Length: 307
Image 1: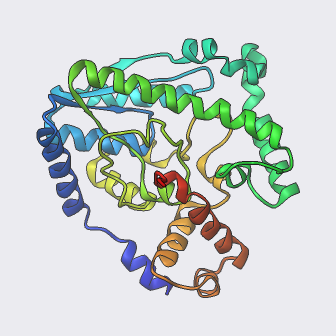
Image 2: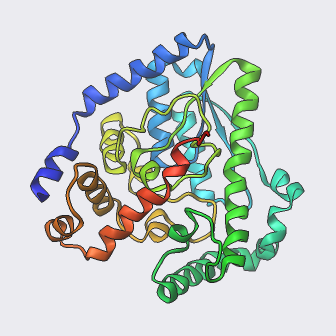
Image 3: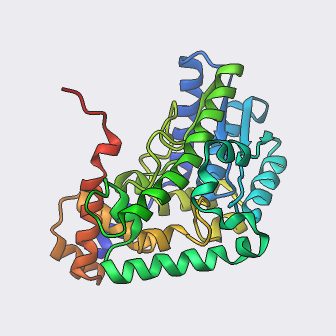
């Protein structure tokens, strides 16, 4: 099975890029927009989307919003600005901290107000995340995919959810403000891996969009596409991170490498049993069960229920 999954995970990057470029161009024309807009984070997914948009409609019709806040990694901001400039993309740098301050988000976790605390907050948050996972056997992310009614430490998890999810929802509001103002198509950057396990903010900047070009590609396939598109190595190789909670990378939050996660998800999608998957990929049965649970628990995030 392992060879089968590796083979099926491979993509023809040239062909995929061509399809996605056409997809973006066709939808901009079909929906009668004058350009496209995206959130540029300094990560690989948004860099791939920006690159595809430039190829599809031209740099002159592509607008990137770079929307850092108090907890943002300054390296990501630099990478986003550098990437936009290198590709001739019109960009707007908008600090969303004042919006979050006004709403009250930073009052939930005020440690960032003091510079020395801000510097060590990443290490502290990461340690607390690991302690919670060790005590409960589940990551805070997996717990919070659904509601936390009756959960241990539910009070702190509710505050964390409110704290970080607001950031992506504020970014979504800004994307649509400029999209409406300038008649642009909002292009999302979510990939299939994130979408299948609920690793995104519902109604946030990677969910509430007009089109999602990468939604049929697993994270490792997006990275493969990034190499084909010539995305800088410093963006491709740095640990993926939502950059909304200090110290937390994707793999820490999820508790699994993207390579393993993608293979497990593909095997689940193809109908293999948990024991088969665990044996083939040489991972613990419990790990496969957790991934399957995430896909099932996050179903509500991908649909809108009606009577």
